[in-house]
Length: 342
Image (cartoon, rainbow, N blue to C red):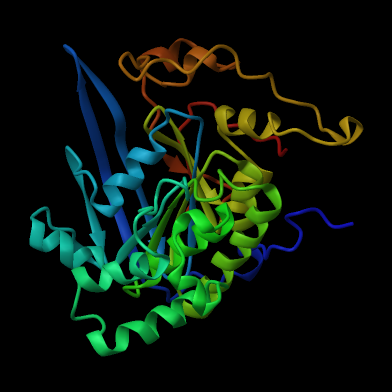
């Protein structure tokens, strides 16, 4: 019997060649800090990545690494303290008018389908709301037909638009959220743990839907998750975050088959394997808890949990450098990158 994820299409197997594809989103050295009492919490510390047309870029890491903060910056719910975001080659403005204009290009599917939808609005009104904010997208006389089209595209019957969120299952609510994100024909959709609250079998259906929409509409995704099995299924490229810093990036094959950062390898080794006899020799398990972002360790932020850290790691912060084995612009931030494949 196939597993729940075997029906999903591997994004890496079907990804088109990077040559000739436009860059639709660029994040340049994003920094986000928050005041916590008299201290400063650094949620993001110089995060950079780019996203090509028709590509899914996965962002993975433990809780507290800055994934959701990055999502909020990308869609404009918060503004970076330093750095810049470009959409379709144009800097994203910070004013209200510029924000509204750029919001058509990038939309978001939220983590919890139960709280992301207004319980007092019908599903149809929820999907209609973007047209009220951007009336130039679809004329008033065409909106009902467009809503019906969106419901059918995400696998919901047209008559479902008259129901309220409480009348839907979690998977159906997430489909409504996807329909709302599609309403303005965005080029980028940010999925922030968008299948984490769903049953495993429903996760596979939603992942299939997202892949189908990417193939049909040419949408690009920033897909944020802590679940490595999901990340491997849907991503073309992956960036690994630790305490607000990118520690490794590359194609899904590079990162999952040949991880070079000790943190990446530790995450992969922590994934449960049904048959322990086929498990490869594991790297040392992660030790201790993630340090507080109020007091990030000097040098390499991972050094306090790293089995191969040296004095150099405490005094010198490693910068992202090209992976010697990568064919897809992969980078790793480690003084002693690993060479043994998983």
